[in-house]
Image (tube, rainbow, N blue to C red):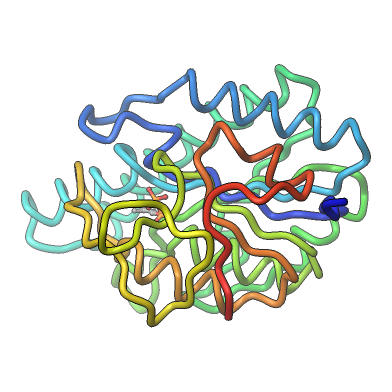
Length: 243
Ligand code: IPE
């Protein structure tokens, strides 16, 4: 009998909720499916925090501004934050439209550089809300730091004591060197080297595995976006990340 997750952090990967090859384009099919799955999970009594990635909003914006202006200062950070705030509105609209009480926590309000205080997220979670936050650009000492949603998700999962941490992606899990999905993986294991479609400024699958494995959640999985609810219900879908 699979053990369902009583509380979870789900990362909506940018590869899932945006069209990575099309700048500033939401993949509504994937986003609405994820929101529907989140809605069923919450309706069944699950406690949930959502973290989302940047995809063709944040990653695209960072790369474009770096190329055009040679670096990211205050104005560029503001532009990155605007693009991520736009995507976060799409995410909460989709969630609220399905009856999920989702509220946005922009990272720059609780992160000083890479050091984040997750108390506001926990306060809203305890109040019965579904906090939503995301990878973002923040200004520290006049320069931009890009905070990865993968890291935020792992740290929030530990901070709120979530028993499950699920990363939703556009692939069926972590692929092994032969190109087939692995049932489980540890951060140092050999995996397929995937070419990145679109931009990625925060470090790909190996980085994700390191962050994912660092959380204290009892169950960490990387799954296709269609399989998030099954993962939350305790089914063995996608790839389990072991510490
Ligand atoms: C990236 O967040 C945020 C920015 C580039 C501003 P993530 O690194 O979590 O995004 P995805 O999920 O890989 O797209």
